[in-house]
Amino acid sequence: MNQAHAIKPRCLLAACAAISLAHAQSPPSPKAAAPMDLTGYWVSVVAEDWRWRMVTPAKGDYVSIPINLAAEKFADAWDPAKDEAAGEQCRSYGAPASMRVPERIHITWQDDRTLKVETDAGQQTRLFHFGDWKAPAGPPTWQGDSIAQWETARAGTAGAENEAGHRFGDLKVVTTHLRPGYLRKNGVPYSAQTILTEYWDISTERYLSGSHKNEQWLTITTIVHDPMYLQQDWITSLNFKKQPDGSKWDPEPCSSRW
Amino acid sequence: MLLSIGLSIGAPLMAEVDLSGEWQDKYFEDWPERLPGPDIGDYIALPLTAAARTKADSWESSVQTLPERQCIPHPNPYSLRGPADLHIWPVPDPVTARPMAWIMYGTFGRATHTVWMDGRPHPSKYAPHTFEGFTTGVWEGDMLTTYTTHIKMGYLRRNGVPTSDEATVTEHWVRHGDILTVTTVVEDPIYLTEPLVRSSNWLLDPHLQRFSTPCEPVVEVPRKPGDVPHYLPGTNPFLNEVSKTYHLPLEAVRGGAETMYPEYRKKLKEQYVPPAKCVRYCCGWINLLGPDAVTGKLNCDGSEAKAP
Image (cartoon, rainbow over all chains, first blue to last red; front, side, top):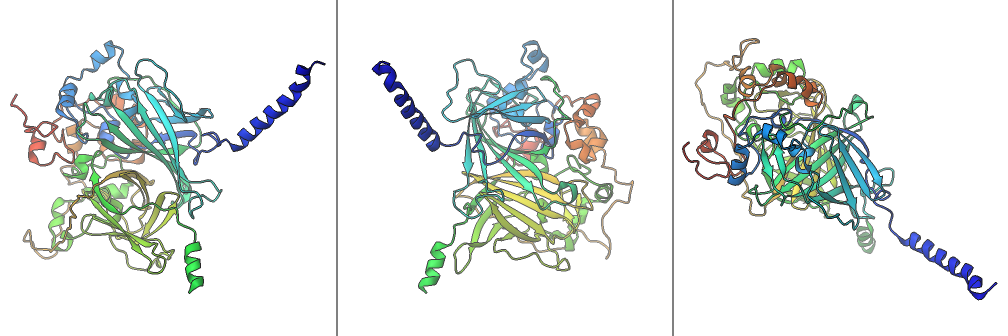
């Protein structure tokens, strides 16, 4: 046995020890560190903005959105047939609007650092990347590039953990590199300069009675910042109810008219 | 004395967030309903029982002019959905200095939310009910969850959609930087078939002027004693107006839990043809109020519209 072979096992042992130490000290993956379980099926319950979400509103109906004159002129020229002909029928399913569509969403972990959100309406897929993910080069997309992080209650404080010992927290997602689309089906635009910030919070309704007791609800607070088409940030929030399974999952393609 | 100081220092800190400050209400959803006010017969997106519809159908807006009703504040199940710039401050416990209560002031008519954080129980079911109700709160991480009982019979929308004195309200208060989001869960065994869940948003604004709503009843409309404006069943002539204006099926306008889920869109798809153009409240938001915004004299950004 030559000397090189003789020292190899010792080197391997040292390497293994170093790796073990690194593992012992490395923080848990975003999946393991999740302060709440977002996975599963959720249904949007449209108790707000029903007239602008459940149906396509009339042309010129821009109420509640702080648009500027450029946006008004753009939306006044809305033509769904033209969008269809141009293959742009997913304009109202981009990230700033996709959670407002009446729909079911399915949330899974694509890997330990990537949360995947799929919609049945419009069949869109959003990917929330944790950590130091770098967006690949390429053209902007409907769902853009999303960077995610958990925000957790301060450790060691009373009330910071639930009964199972898990720390409470929320999910913050910032999305950029968006392909221009519509905030509302009737052509209210957002531009490529849009920055979308979302906060995802889960509540458990322990005060409700009967079959509703302990229902889980997801509230998504959404801030759309668009210096091109908005006079100020458009702040809204949406509510989804947890579903026991995906039996009502009903995929349908994008539509520019409905 | 040393012992008590030691105990005070050694007590665990609460995982609570400072909610105090001046919060500007953002009406970026349902602006027409929340500011100008809802149309008569608009029960859209409410999971109402038949009893609720019957009662709401009898509502005549002039009932608000009765002296005994003029000063009714927005009741708890509605107050955060209506106009409500909030001024929030804690009431410190005199010994620990921790908030023993949070005061959420600013709802219309001063039915101020007082959220008791000191663990006190809710009163007996025979205790008097008020428009603000009795509220306790607990921190769940950085989320303040409150629970309100003992609410007087009131309304869920400013067009007579009722809430009963058995209604309860859960709220989840979450602060993300300068944005406050409150998710409100209303349960009412008399007038709702399932809980109504909505969320509203506020923006921190240290310059916000506090707005008070004092009220002194006067005789607005001379009436005979005992006269109460109302419609008898089947006589309200305005119940079809929303359906006609927005081309919506009357069934959808009458509300109901079924209408709030994605499946209902399939039904609507067969029946709905959008109006050719928007005719009212086309541009409203918080900085764009008043009749000029409604009549089209202003562009959506507030600039003067040129005549066509």
